[in-house]
Each structure stands twice: as C-alpha cells, then as structure tokens.
Length: 129
Image (tube, rainbow, N blue to C red; front, side):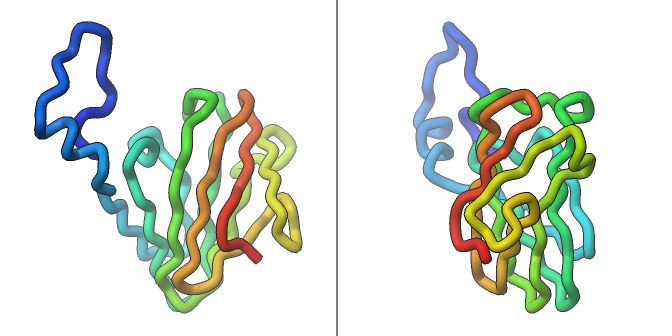
C-alpha cells in the first residue's frame, strides 16, 4: 500500500507520505482466480497476468467491508481475458457498460476502476468489453 494512507486526524503529512500519494503499489496476481482484499484499495494496482481466462472477484460486504467510495484498480496484463464479477452475485451487484453488465471483461493491457457505491453495489468503469 502506498505510504500516507490511511491518515487520521492529527497526523502530520510528511514528504514521504505526500510523495507516496502519486505512486501505485503493485499487487501482481498470476492465478486464474483472485478475490479482492482490503489492502487492494487506495493506490494499489492489481495486475492480472495469466495466459488463460481468469477472474477478478468482488467479495460481499460481509466478507470485506470496503467503505463506500472505495476504488480498486485492476489491469489485465496477461493474454487471457479477465472477467470481473461478484463472489456472490445474489448479494453483491456489479454494474458496467460492458456486453454483460454484471460480468465485464478486460482484454490484454486494458484496465478498469471498480467503485463501491453502496453496501454491496459496485460500478466498473474503464476499458471493458
């Protein structure tokens, strides 16, 4: 996670914290399925790298209570298509402008931002198919 996050009232912003705000920390994933964890928020770039089709899963709020407004950035650097979807589709809603709104896909070298807008509601925006 980038330095500087999270800060609390009374913290003094140091140059190291400030400079860390503009850099991504990489979370490199090479498997065929990855489920987001709490450390994937803020300035983290989750890279999906697999030659086969793979999946990025969004957990329910009961599993990982991301704050509303959280953004997770995902980039597919592998040759396999990356599908973004909910771990539990009946509980967590994923919406996008993709061909399949609840399961948008990322081709190689494409990225998307996953934005939490409600307790179990996420929008996916970016280079989705």
